[in-house]
Image 1 (tube, rainbow, N blue to C red):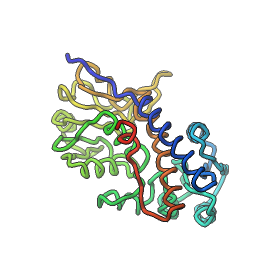
Image 2: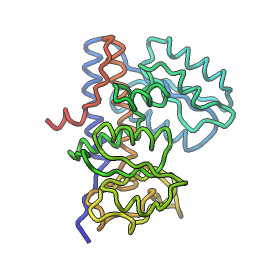
Image 3: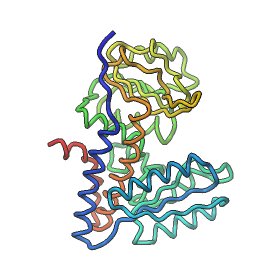
Amino acid sequence: MIESKVLDGKLVSAVLEEAVKNKVLDYKEEYNDDITLATIIVGSDKASKTYVNMKSKACQRVGIQTRNYSFPEFTTEDLINLIQTLNEDTSINGILIQHPLPKNIDEQKCFDQIATEKDVDGLSSKSFGKIAFNEEAFGAATPNGIIHILDFYNIDVTGQKACVVGRSPILGKPLAAMLLNRNATVTICHSKTKNLKEEVAQADIVVGAVGKPEFIKKNWLKKGAIVIDAGYNYVNSKTVGDIENPSGIASLYTPVPGGVGPVTIATLLTNTIAAANMQASKTNTYNRQFVKEERK
């Protein structure tokens, strides 16, 4: 058994929020204008409403305004029309569509309607494509949040074997691309992967992004591995991740709760202030160096 160090997402989130708060003040001083994030909820999912409320409160803490749109029922065409209106609205700096959307709506088609410079949740195909080609873009909030955690703790993934368990287009796939861009050797595993246990056991970095409670077992992990748990599941009124608590095996790990989750929300804030600055100055500077700047 080894001594495991917790990668504290709450601490990383606090650093990011303070950096954004300062940048918002600078923005208001320079442009004499507010920064506004538009949030869209379709349906009556309680979890979605909770998440949007958390994001709105985070915006309030750093001085970002929110404009909330909530619809019990909507069609794909209705949502596309709203997105196009928000794209053209110069007072809106970022657009967030809370997912998942109801089954009657073509989710990806709607995400792809968001203007690239306002796609602060990084969910459009164009944003993902740019990340895959190692070009500047807003990365999806959760994988980009994981990168913020790695940066905060000065974790260099160069040459490391990373195993991402989960191939979601909003988490597993973009994170794999981001790690590849940082010169890690990446394996993506999923429900059809043979010998999953063996794949995990070879990895220096393991990311749980499969959405199943404690799916990855502690005894699968390589001793001293870095463990990033992006899962958030309720089991017997308790919150657990996608990986069994790796304390004693992992050298570094993110807890659930208090790990990736808080940084995901903070990353939405960093993307929103970057979007506002891009739109105001007409540049293409995505500036995601918030953590590195604060640690200088």
